[in-house]
Image (cartoon, rainbow, N blue to C red; front, side):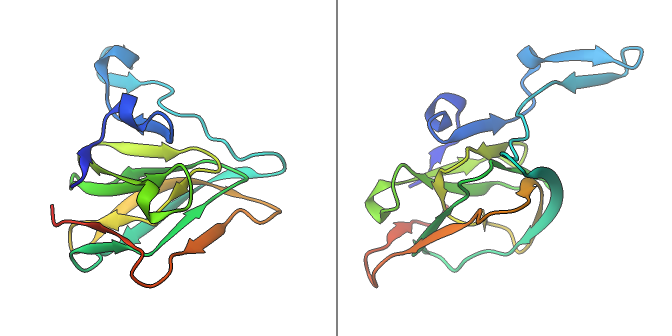
Length: 158
């Protein structure tokens, strides 16, 4: 069962991006609230930060985690563009037994730290768009591990 996405629980894997009033201030003559520096782009040496839109579609339930990936050269941030809950699966090592699944609210994003194992985007709606801050540049910034048949983590329906 997924655990609710919370800053302290997610800290070993990256940052939670949300509108926390403790990290905000008013600008534009008091008409705009700025939630400042919620995460920092980390493109790594020789890279540049880029913005993309990822459009996710749901995986069949129950969701089977058959692989993990990581980006050794830069962090990757996902911010939902619609207010639908979604899932984040991360792991300290590339093993099904090490996976942790978080249920993110539709107003929460995450920045997955450089080198952290994670599953690709897991949406629960028929289609959901995300603004993604990622790295472009030289070098191999994608490593993937595929699990042996049947040695998968499974996520119960939410």
